[in-house]
Length: 159
Ligand code: HEM
Image 1 (cartoon, rainbow, N blue to C red):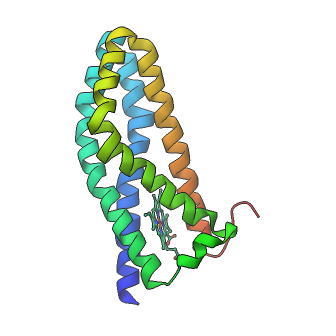
Image 2: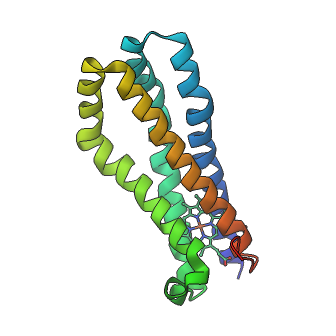
């Protein structure tokens, strides 16, 4: 069972780095750029700073997914995905899928250039959209963490 404990430690460390980073970007970086730069410059500054975090997040999401699926396989826990009480298992996979798609597919393929074009035409509205999207992702991530911590102890947040 030591391998499961090791996977769990790796899982939580990856989640801490990744979701902690999302919290930092949402609650510190984005509001600071808003107050320090005029609308026309905000997207370029945000993009330059966030690129480094995105690189890190690609690694931490990969570790989270690999360690997570390893635990599901080792604990023979696939049937949890058929039980509504294990909503937090679905939440983990859904949150992971949203970020994985964003980081590996949507952002590099077209979102980056689309946002750059939109920011050139409507800087304020585009920046506001980016802020709201990050708040939404952070809320989803925190709900997932809360559900998983309670759920893995056999407790249900909504009972
Ligand atoms: C492919 C995606 C994922 C899979 C397959 C997965 C799977 C798992 C499994 C099997 C456990 C152990 C549950 C138990 O002990 O009963 C676990 C724990 C946990 N996971 Fe995930 N997970 C994934 C993604 C995520 C994400 C995205 C987050 C956070 C946003 C997350 C946060 C946690 C936390 C906080 C724990 C509980 C740690 C503890 O209290 O000991 N996981 N995960």
